[in-house]
Image (cartoon, rainbow, N blue to C red; front, side, top):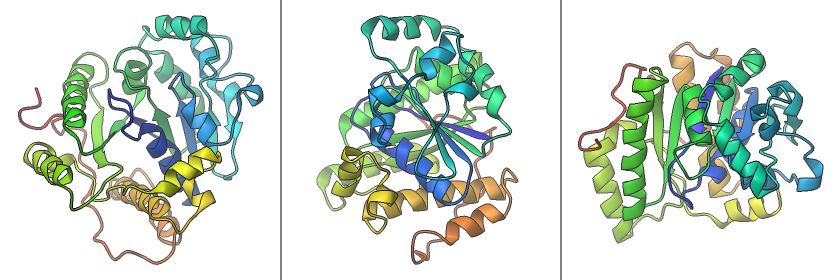
Length: 295
């Protein structure tokens, strides 16, 4: 089971969009996938069509020690995709969850119950580092850092790189950066050029080959409570997230985490092949977490 947190300490970077559509794409490739909504706003649930009245229990109950993780799993439209909502409905519940999440082992222990049930667990983190995000990072094998092309996003990237170094030193020495993912990307703009130059100078070995283009279909799909591939499979956004999933599956297969079936299943979905080169084997857990000048 590969546990991936999607995190950056800034809102508006595409964490929920990435979490939902990556999880859906992995499920479409017949990888058993669990999406966990760790953001108290519950945006992942909304993006999957769940309303507050449909959610009777969720991650809050796991942290409150009233339910095991197995008891708060919900089904989705995709056969291979399950979901755990955050179910935070009051300020008091949110404050209690923050206190409960000070115990950094809660998520890690909870995931033990389902480690034989899934190939992937995707955790949608809130735009903060402390509390529930720390819990998620302590339980994860790797982290995806989605970011827009902007100065503030680069600052947030540097913050999480520093924080991951600390997490590795004190709680989870095995965590590594799955990749930095450019989202809402508009090529041929000055800000895209500047951001790209900074990323290549400091973090080139962490960049995903795939970037997520600015695409209205992604927002429309979330509005209608569906992953993009179920709303418009031929859209640029849906195809980009599927190619991202294929890149991740390819790495895990190359490292022995998944069978070769993962590549075959992924390649058979999503229309014509793009003809891109396969990514290099996964960057090992012994890799440095931060690029130069990030500390």
